Image 1 (cartoon, rainbow, N blue to C red):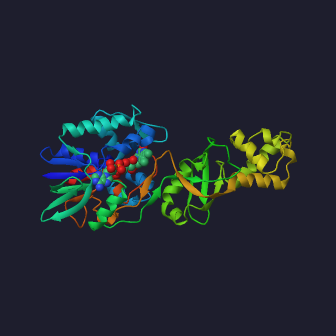
Image 2: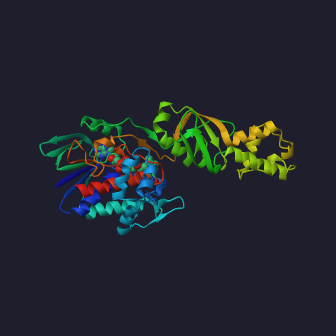
Image 3: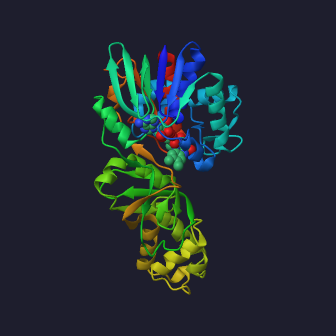
Length: 398
Ligand SMILES: Cc1cc2nc3c(=O)[nH]c(=O)nc-3n(C[C@H](O)[C@H](O)[C@H](O)COP(=O)(O)OP(=O)(O)OC[C@H]3O[C@@H](n4cnc5c(N)ncnc54)[C@H](O)[C@@H]3O)c2cc1C
């Protein structure tokens, strides 16, 4: 049996290795259009490779996939995040989970994962052909003809793992595979506003951010950057709102609650503090554990002089300050990438594949895995996990 895997990235390598391990008699070839392998694995997780996540139950996992969601339940039931950690461990790569459940190799280097994959490809006699770009895919009688920039090759089965390449999606559309619109996901919000200008690096443990006139609202750590706002709360919004925000051309309004408490509780806590310390100067005593520089900026912005004590604040000043802290209104004027990390929302429709085998329903012998499909997730190792699980399922099915 001759199997051609197209794409020398995460999904391509993982699928090829598992097929070759299970079927030593199969001839497995990886075709890669560039002269580099596993490029995204190399830069992933800031060079540390957030290889998977500690969360392991399928019902919990699927909640991290805005595109995919419940449909991915059987996938993670078959090959879970724990299965991936075990897979790596059994092949010499130990991993460790961080407090926020993200899993990394203990070496803290993506090269460990790359070395493992390359070694396994070699020991399992996988042929790797670089500079071989797929240009056309044809079904001829009972076999596939893979036309590349170098040569045409025959295969009994083909796995497409070409990631988010617009040129390759075009080729796949010509093969009559249907796809959704594709838009960016996992981006940060550009905001030019005196309230946060020059405060880059200041972070908030748990903030809530709402996008005005939508149902989009998320909670989590929030970070002020040179360009605006970032951090998990923003990245989650960018992922769940990928299509809605693209429609708005990345111009919209947000409401930010910087506090861990709701606005009525914040009023009560503020009042209690005020009653206890009426003589303390507002400027000098940040409340709600807010970073000092941010508190000072907000106090100034609300027109409260640095000499005014809590006891002498007018009702209007208190209202203004609490409103800024719990319902600050900001205009988003664009997007930026987060540490160069991004994924593409959209791809080949999931209705095109059987979610038990990842084989194309209308094209037996053709399989798809990874970002080429309409699956994407929040940050945390979930995007790779979708590649690993699909690769495993395909290796069982071929
Ligand atoms: C900077 C960055 C950091 C990231 N960090 C993480 C992280 O820590 N954890 C996580 O879970 N996710 C992370 N992601 C997302 C993750 O990298 C992707 O979801 C994942 O790499 C997708 O794997 P893939 O194999 O589907 O696609 P890719 O890794 O993009 O591989 C596709 C391969 O196919 C090749 N190809 C394309 N077209 C053709 C063709 N016509 N013929 C032959 N070959 C072709 C491409 O050259 C490429 O090598 C990160 C993404 C970025 C950009």
